[in-house]
Amino acid sequence: MRATRHIAIVGANPAHTAILEDGAREAGVEKIFHVSGIENLPAHIRAVDPDAILIDLATPQRAALEQVFEMSRTIRRPIALFVETSDSETVQASVDAGISAFVVGELRKERVRHVLDLCVSRFNATAKLQAELARAKAALDERKVIDRAKGLLMTAKCLTEDQAYALMRSTAMNENKKIADIAQSIMTASQLLK
Image 1: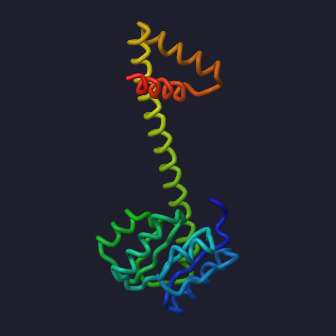
Image 2: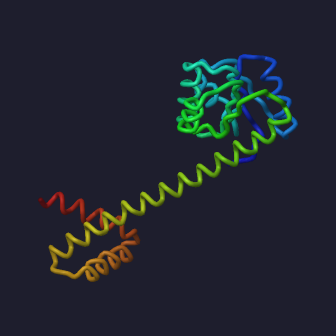
Image 3: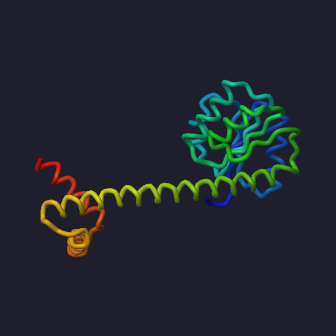
């Protein structure tokens, strides 16, 4: 994630957005884009491509929250949501939607820097975990394909497991490919020969 120099502030209350803007400027934010409401929020956010998003909903209504949650699922950015009151269901829905910071209570500019730092840090930590999970899933999927391909080779060529793996490994090296790619080719060829 690049440095937080460009943010979007979303909110219909000019007094609240002024507080957020003052706090953001004190935090070193260079460019601030204002969105006055929730209507077409994803399009507005995509157009300015901010580093982070600060949203003031004051007293959140279900329709507004759904718009924010939908945007947070489709646009991967650190998002801080500021509300005056909340309930446990709204907090849980915010976490599920990927909101990086959920701030309840009085809006003060002195808090913005810390909330922004927390928001970006939490977003980065979550993104790192998601990337690690994706790599682990991909490795597991590759391992499954390799094991199936070994089984096919063992049956078709009367090889041991080690021999089947060695054959795939040498083929991969000769063709400058990954073993998983060779294994997938074996799986594909097997399906065609059925």
